[in-house]
Length: 495
Image (cartoon, rainbow, N blue to C red; front, top):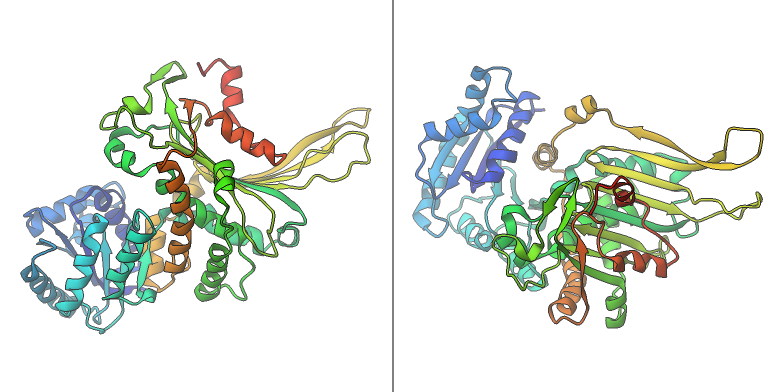
């Protein structure tokens, strides 16, 4: 069903809007989820005309369009208003433009606001939207906000208070694009539509869970931003813990947004808060030094542009979370995320407990691997008989990978998430209870690291992180399942 809505994008001249938002809206347009009864108002400080704004939109979607005419027809629904977020007069003009477009496109007063700007402007925008009666209670009114949602619990809480002055919690959609990825959403299907997994998805059968977010790139041109953020804030507080919640949650009573969200919130509230000594032992930070991968030399993090040459910001974070629930009490959820690692990849490994062997040799544990990117799919490692006259065991696997055609046809994460917002589906968005619980735990780790009460390990560019990350798993009798650096070293591709 096609949505009737006026979309207002704050930060319409930015990179995110051009790379993600306009193409995603266009895909929704092509699929019929947006048709005649919609318009998009772009606002930013730049003094663009409607014609120039349309040309920017056309340029961003031309590769997706069947024809130039189709792209231009889509772009004709876009309107531009130069906007200073602190100027009340600009909000009055915005309200008038919204009213005109609502009448022209018969949008039934439905409004969607997308804040694609720095978080320090969120409160100002929300306040003016309310005070100037742009948020007026007519039709549906929904707000999408980009990460980062604060830099700690205190700033996130203040930001949330500012937004709640104009919107209810049910109207706020805190976007995390990782939750729009096809395989992350497929975790529900793998877990709850297959008896062989759901019946063993617990501490009686699972030894540990491993989550890896690996990037081969360094900080690139983001050095200034990254040096104030670091891996823990950039990747763990949001992506890692959100993924953990999907893996650790109990089965919801029904597949509805409210039931799923309720089970996710329980996971966040059940996150175990370690003592200070446990924090030092269970969480590892690292920073990449120079290295050589495939003959290419890479500089150290401290040599990157716009990075403090004495920086103690972590480019790698690893650790063990525990969920104090009946299902998973005592099971470590290991994670690692870092820049300038061996390969780019997001993997989840569910490592099942080893069986007692009757064959006179130890059995390898069964491992379910969920591939999230760059490929999508899953594999299950099994123990089988090696071909031959003797009875010797050998590992084998059942593999499923989404082919390139299907992967290319799957919705972009932003397309999927915007579609969800238009259809009032908050399943794949973060509730404030989740955000607040995650910040309270992350803040304790950040405080420890900021005061240098835990070592900053270095690791060579091209490795899979510092040795301390491997040592951590050994303490629990485990080891990282995905170790691409081993093959690279054997082939002489790492120096």
